[in-house]
Image 1 (cartoon, rainbow, N blue to C red):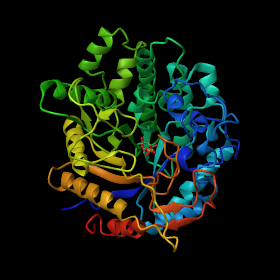
Image 2 (cartoon, rainbow, N blue to C red):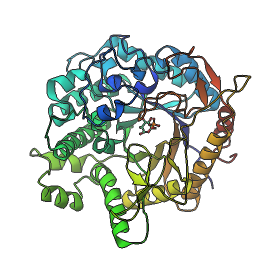
Image 3 (cartoon, protein in one colour):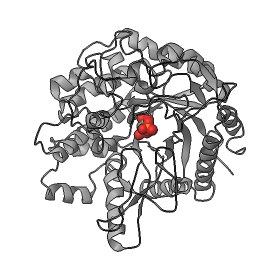
Amino acid sequence: MGFPKDFLWGGATAANQCEGGIFEGGRGLANVDVCPAGPDRSAVLAGHREMLAMDGSHRYPAAEAVDMYHHFREDIRLFGEMGFKTYRLSISWTRIFPEGDETEPNEEGLRFYEEIFKECRKYGIRPLVTICHFDCPIGLIRKVGGWRSREMIGHYLRLCEVLMKRYRDYVTYWLTFNEINMILHAPFLGAGLVFAEGEDEERTKYQAAHHELIASALATHMAHEINPENRVGCMFAAGSAYPFSCRPEDVWEALLTDQGNYFFVDVQARGYYPSYAVKRLRKKGIFPRMEPGDEDILKRDTVDFISFSYYNSRCIAAPGSATEEAEGNLFRSVKNPYLKFSEWGWPIDPMGLRITLNQVYDRYQKPLFVVENGLGAQDVPDENGRVEDDYRIDYLREHIRAMKAAVEEDGVELMGYTSWGCLDLVSASSGEMKKRYGFIYVDKQDDGSGTYARSKKKSFDWYRKVIASNGEML
Ligand code: BG6
């Protein structure tokens, strides 16, 4: 009983939120670099304000982030000390192809990740690589408009081929796109989309989504050809939608919300556009343009496993049912009166993880992987410089318990768990440093000050014991 003995415990990061060093190693500029901290961030993420270069009047937190570019050996040693079985990281696309359309990759960028993988191997950590965690080269946004263009598929596949061949001996777990459904909520982040005045944004988003879905299927095919041992997963921002009440209109609205997110996984895991999407997109006149052969590509290359991030459930009301909105992961929902909330207003719902795991497994019957989960909180070091983050331990403990119940009692097939931001890093939605998720504190503050020194929080030792006991000592 309990978690399977080869359960992949670990932590997760994304290149743009931890590496920094954006002008080093021949790296080019990407969308993720030019998302500023502060009030303009949300318009930029939404593609409503064009920002394709840095200007003097904003602060760009990804530029230095927590400088993992220079600290990765120390960081991976700490992951090893916690006993990580896996480390989920992403590749910065522009370290490998600085403009995005080069024919030859940048050797310095490739060497950087090779060093990371070698370091992981020292500690018996298996990398889980997100090929694209929100990155889109600015060069490609300028030239083809990001994922609105079908040309992106070729550029993305060139990246995949280089990575899968070069790291064949190091990596067998791959995720094609991080939170692919984020394209609907933060399209500049999800797909490098900047909208023109009066543009039909929904049409563009679904067209771009189609290109990503085709790219994902082709990348899955390629991965299996390059190394039959490769296992490829999709990744979506999960969190079941609860109806605000048993009023049928609320239940219906919640169902629509879930379908909106499952749409992507339906395609990636089942291999075709679900009938509800075909009907609704056609009715709105925004069904994406397809090329001959697209349906076959989707059908042939479905994913091996399904991964997702889970921070919270969502509570959904039909118009006229509730008024108070809740925060949470760039998705709109209303306040669930039965839940507590984080300092950033995100609902805290461990049981929702069990519900989500069951719903996703019921729907697809493929192995699942929780690749993000955690509590963003302001950690204040005490007079000894120590962070006593009992609140984080409580959050994680309850979520791991819920996951355990899903495995032990409900029979969900679960491959692993990588908590988000195992090392403090920059927040994706707010660009803040003070919203911390890590077991490892990084001395870097929102005003840019700090030494980048790493120190262990109380949760570090707690998580080490969780892993050592395979989830028994919680
Ligand atoms: C997910 C992303 O949406 O949530 C991460 O994949 C992100 O990149 C994480 O950091 C937590 O969100 P935030 O906004 O608190 O950083």
